[in-house]
Image (cartoon, rainbow, N blue to C red):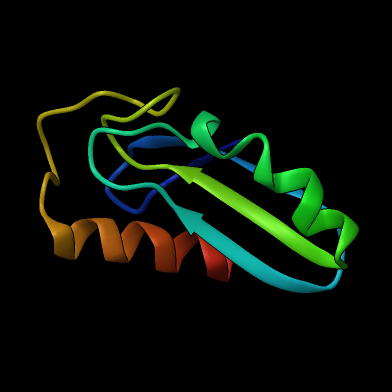
Length: 82
């Protein structure tokens, strides 16, 4: 799935399962796909798993703007609010 940030960057994420949410924020330079083996285990344990590709990572838009940790925090906050 995709969502557009307040500064108009398209980010890719998955949202699976039901229950208490867990948000996975892969370290800079990584992609959300590295968590694929853990997600079914978390879902089976009763969690909702939200897995975000940050800007310039994985399937999210690659851009020169907003490449700060503070912006990554805003991106995560906006996704959670969505």
